[in-house]
Amino acid sequence: MIYLDNSATTKPKKEILDAFVKANEQFYANPASLHQMGNAAEDLLEKARAQIAGLLNMKHVVFTSGGTESNNLAIFGTAHAYQSRGKHIITAETEHPSVLNSLKVLEEQGFEITRLPVDRFGRLSLNELKNALRSDTILVSLMHVNNEIGTTHPIADIARLLKNTRTFFHVDGVQSIGKLSFDQTAMPDLLTMSAHKIHGLKGSGVLAFNDVELKAILAGGGQEAGLRSGTVSVPHAAALAKALRLAEANPAHKKWNNDLREFFWSYPNIMVVSPEDGAPHILSVAAKGIKGEILVSGMQKEGIIVSTSSACSSKSREASHVIEAIGVPRDYKDGVIRISFGAFTTQQDIRHFKKAFERVNRLIKGV
Image: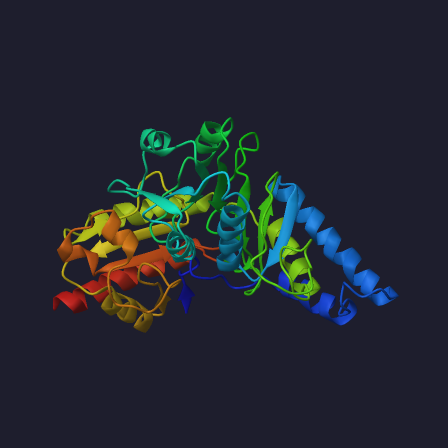
């Protein structure tokens, strides 16, 4: 099978699996224990933490179970710590469910949430963001790369806009870290990542942050400087550090993205949903009058794995909130599929995809 659903998850690299196994075999003691084996585990944990902080150019790193928990900690942790300063938070309509649903909870607790609209390609207006800022705005939470259509928000410009304010900036970097570069001179205050998006292991993530005081969202033994109670998985931390060290952008992704765009433009019944200036590893298209699930099933029979717009929230067959927000026409919005590349994707995979799609499209159209 040719796997082109890397935005949902990636295949772990052998080097990362080896690092995880080795850490389990040699550093299985609890890093909070006072004995020699516990100290050795703690040393490995702190080495991984320092490496990740350095690679992300952030001061502090908290290990979590993944992107959802990291986003929750960033949002709830900041909101509860600074609610005496204000209760206004800004986000966009197209954010990940772990952000939008966290903000719904805060709304029920008396916080005021501004959800900025986006254009046809999921881009927000910096002027609208600037105008939405208030003296009681404590947080702006935005993703760097949209997981469904690949739109990239201008993170550095937003960080500079917020620099001299009392508003913290949280960036969901799950779909960009290890794939796109950050402007090191304009970093956000809080940054979320997940290992399984960069050929690491599921159940492993990070919230990195700078000068922000956070309130914990888990009660327990006070691990991770009191911010994330529970025995820390040293093997997961070591494997995540390895994944981040090995992660690198692939210049071929942009070429393949453009190649597939031109391929789909030849189909009068296909709309390219993703913006041209979006992330190179994600391309979403929509078929007129065809269910996305039918295309996914047809491609699978041809040995190609793609997905409908998102696998992060559920297997709902309704159009996603992102597709609704960008205004995809009614006769196209049920036919969205997403193609996403990873480290194991090859040029041959792209050639096979195009041939398979041609066959599937002919079958669907009865030609």
